[in-house]
Length: 571
Image 1: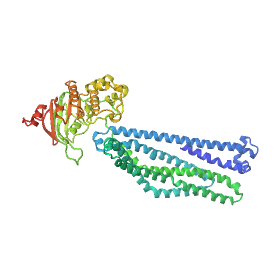
Image 2: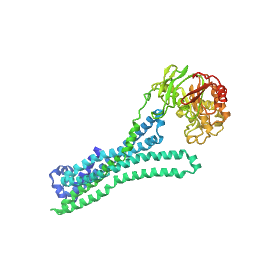
Image 3: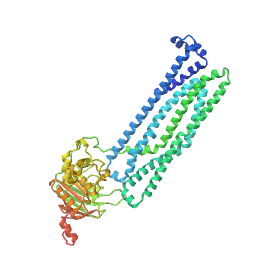
Image 4: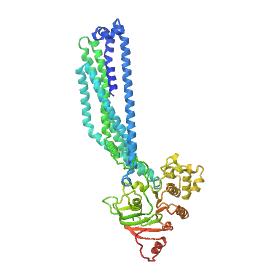
């Protein structure tokens, strides 16, 4: 920035002697200060000054242009590198947030923060700040150069232009703040409407509700574009007024100087320098104002981005791979209670449960009885509001939570599949070069999907499409089960993971899991009681607590009306 400013002074300063030689070379030839240069160059008459000064002026202009080009390259490179750091840091911090944080906010806010607002910070904050700094330095340099030519005219021009921009800033500040809030809010709404429209495309096509979604999107997008256009107009419009006033100023000065003694010959060098100075000064002033205007328009997006950057990282980040927590005996849930927020009622109340290692436990209960919440707490995704969890008499805390999760594989009802190959989806989260191909095939066989995969032309290299859209619901769930088995965890949790399977396939999958060994602990949520036929114990939840426990046959008998003594709440 400083070098570019000196180059500007050089290019403006070279104009005065160049124009003076063009109009009156004798005066330059007789100047005492020019004599050392004249003697060193071996010049003997005034006409010989034109060629070297033309070369000097050309070199000064090239240096100035080259420095401005270099400054533009440096500003752009620094801005986009910083933008990449922001986006990567937000994404990384977001992925490390607790599950409760992800549940409590809309994903469109985060997606917009990572892709939209972080990108907006580059164009509306970082680049304008760098431009504002470089413009300020350049303004000072140009002003110094103009002051050396004619202080009164330079100060009048600079003060007049500055005063106009000052008034514009005062009157547009509030409008820019409104635009900034609208841009930040509506950009999130645009992404939200896109996600909802494309995510529910089957229902939209069936219901014919495209117009309703287009209406929501149009309203958000129109307000967003309108605010963006308003910000750009406010930022760029003063330039045309200033250019017109600048031309008028030069015309008035030309008329006034031409009326003085020596007329045009004396006025030409001064007018040339002032014209060049104004030609450099006005764009730099406009750059400075435009940068300020853009920064005002990006304030709210910057605040939202900084809020995402302030997300705390857990202690285990950047540490070596964690050592799994010792689990040889049982999981104890002691007086466990949980609510999602202070304003909502308790989902679980004073629940006590013992789960021994190697058992197969089924969980049943009406919708809202707390089955999935209980398993989320056991997996360490949610922290209990009250009570404790002990693994082999070792208290589970936020400090050793990751060590406990190393034991766990989870198969949800809605399986997420990436738009990649079957193999990459089974070995989910493993880089392509580190996938154990034989382990993938073994997990597929255990999940009763290997025969189907191997019947396809590309087999395990078959692409599943976005969110597995090219697969049936049962195939997606079996890939999810294979993913859990690939992990070779010793605690597998099925959250209604077999609901899309037919009875025969479901029984084959469960029998395959049964054969994995006595050290494997399996926790299953199911709506169909027959799914839990092979479980060692079934726990029925109701009203935030345990209603009854028993074997499959005992639960069947109770439901059929055959009474039996209630078992202690222990598994």
